[in-house]
View (cartoon, one colour):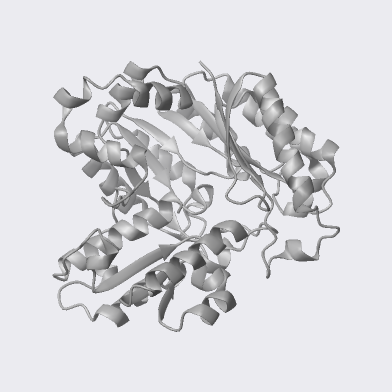
Length: 412
C-alpha cells in the first residue's frame, strides 16, 4: 500500500492498543483480522481481492478497510459479505470495536509507517533486525545484501549500512483527501475531499520529531500541494512555519503534483536555496500536452521543462517522478516525449506504470484504448531506453498477461 494507508494501519494499531487489544503478527493466531487494502490499479486491486479470499478462508472475523471497498465495491461484495470501511470513512471503525477508552478520532495521528513483523520481504525484516539489535551488529553488515540494495539506491554497501542505522523517517501527514480530478484516477472516490490539518498541529508534530532526535522529515498527504486550500492557508505558509523551527534536519516531499510546484515556484525555490528540502517526488504522468490535457493534469510540457530544469540545478535535492504508459489514444511518439523528458531532466529515480482502466473514471470514455500487449511493449521499450542512458532498471511482472511495472534508478 502507499505510505498514507500504511500510516492509517499504524493508527489502527495504536487505536487497538489503547483499547486493550493484543496485536498478533500471525493471522492464524488472531480472533480479528484487519486488512488494509490498496486498489490504485486493477492488478493491485485484484491482488487485494485475493488477500480477502485468503484471510476469509481462515474463518476469523475479518474487517476490510482501505480503498478497495470503494473502488472495487461490486467485486468485493460478490466474495465478501462482512465488515467493510472505505478510507474516507475510517472513523466508522468505532462501530465495530465499540471502544471503551479511546475513539479513533481521539487517537493522535501517527508519524511512523506500519511494519508487520511477519513481513516476508527481506528488506523490511532486515530493517527491523537492525533496529532491535543495534549499531554493533549493523556495522559488521557489508555483505551481499547491503551491496545489492545499496546499488539499487545509488549507494555503496557502507553508505547503505549507514543509512539503515539512521532513525526511521519521521512522517508528518499534513492533510487527507484530494483536490484534483485526474481522469484516470479512482482513488479520490475512496479517500474523499481535501481536509487539511491546522498549521499549528503540523508544527507541533514536527517539533515532537525534533525532540525525539529525528533528522529526516517526510511530508506526506494524498494531495500534498493542495494543503490549506480548504482552510484559508497554503503549502508555502506551512513550509515557512516549519523552516523557522531550528534544528539539523531535512525535509522530503512525497508525491506532490507538478501543478503545485509550478503555482508556488518562486516561493518554493527559496526553500531549496536554504537547503531545507532534500527530496521531491513529483509524478508528471506525461510530458505531452495533448495527453496531459486528457488526463486533467492542469499544466503543460513547457511549464514542466522550465520548473524541473530549475529544480535540477540544486544538486543536493533528489528528484523522483512517475509516468503512465498506454493512456488511451496515446501514440508511441507521445510516450517517447515522456521518456525524453526524464532523460533531459536526469531524474534520480522513478516509475513507469502501465495504464489501468478503472470503471467509473472519465478515462473510460476516452477511446481508442491501448492494448495490454502494446503497453507491455512500451514498457520494455522504456527498459531499453533507460538501460542505454545509464539507469539501473527493475521491472515486475506478476503474470504473463499483466503489463509490467518498471522502476529506474540513476547509477552513481
